[in-house]
Image 1 (cartoon, rainbow, N blue to C red):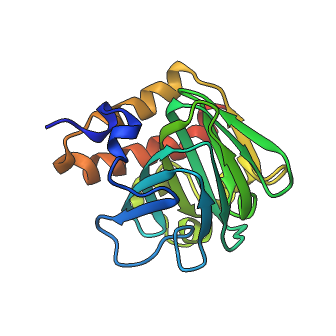
Image 2: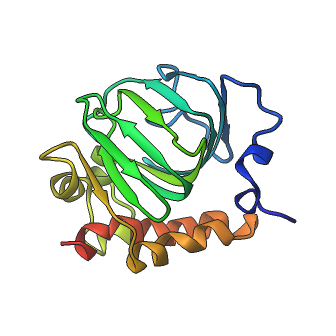
Length: 211
C-alpha cells in the first residue's frame, strides 16, 4: 500500500474542496488543544490533518497543505506547545507578534499556542507536508508519562528552554533532527501508536540535545 507521505501533496488532497481543511481524529475521543470548536481558518487552498492521541495531553499529527496561504485563529494558550517538523515544501508562518518562522525540509520549530493564536501561513512552493506534536504543558508537568518522567522531562523545563523568552524557537535541519523524525513517515499504520510513544520521548528530549 502506498503511504500518503510518498504521494504528491496535490494528489493526497485532490478530493478535498478548496477552502477546506479536513481533520481526522484516529484514536481520540476529545478535541485537542488547537483543532477544537474555537479553531477558525481561511485559505485559497486545502489541507488534511491526521491526528493521533499518544499520551494524555500529547497528540501527534501528520499535516498536508496545498495552497498559497492560510490564516488561522484559535484560543491563545500559553500552557500548550506545538512542535513542527517540515518534511517537504516550505512555510513562512507569521505569528501573532508579527515575527515569522521559516521552515524548509528538515527544519524544526517550537512555539506556544499563544504565539499562533492569530497567524498567517504562506507556502511559497504551494505545498507543505510535515508532522506536528501538541503538548499540554500543564498536563505533562502534573502527570508525566513514565517514559518522559524517567528522563526528567516535564512541561516546565520545555517551556523555559524554548518559549519563555520569545514564545517560539526555530532549529535548522540537522542529522539529529532527521534521525528523530524521518522514521515517522515510513511506518506501517499498525505500528503508529507504539512507535509514536517512543518518538515523543525523543522529541521531548530536544531541549537536552540542543542545550
